[in-house]
Image (cartoon, rainbow, N blue to C red; front, side):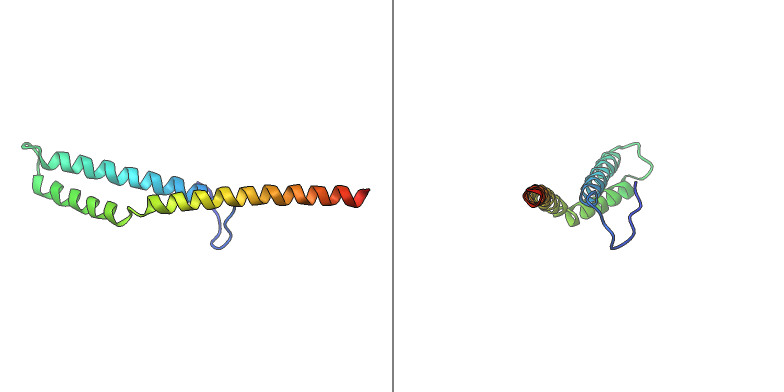
Length: 101
């Protein structure tokens, strides 16, 4: 994990956000699944409690479901920014070459 001061993001910010989002969603899904399984276990100490927790995790997943769509938009934007940066570098190189002639 890198420390980036607020308002001073960098080119890695999108990757960090996407990775963190995917990790969080996976962890929520794993927790929901485990709690749901335990809620159906007849030997569980608290099947009802685990069922409630599974429902809470499920609600969280529904709330953050749009993160996947956001991730795609962020990756697309990041790819476009990289393409444009490459083009700018090419144009600057051409300009520098033509100024030296």
